[in-house]
Length: 159
Image (cartoon, rainbow, N blue to C red; front, side, top):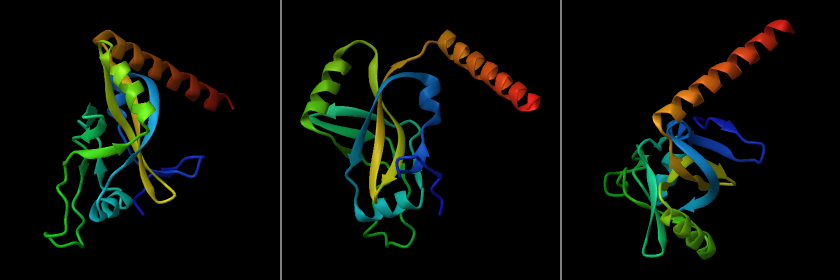
């Protein structure tokens, strides 16, 4: 199976958006369900999902995930297969949508998908309420990551 790893809470992580944590400062993470068709969930279970360049937006009191690529299911015919990059509806409670709308009205906030996971057979996506990082913030993140690697390497060599 091509699912990457298991979280401690029983979720199987299908894919992560590694670029999101580099380009954005994530202030809050909210888990949402995804409304998928039959061939889409089969492709998600096979791990054929790409979150690069994806984002979420609120339109008509609904949250939509735009730009997520789910590859067509190979065993299905052309007639039954899905559009790979169609907008997908996210399943959230009304209070959560209202909260996200209020946060998005503040300057600089956006909704970025961080990872897709399977939770007891259901596809879930973690949406991050994020602000874009400046170039110097990105350099600082790289420096912190390199320092942490050096410390971990020194500790491993010591023991």
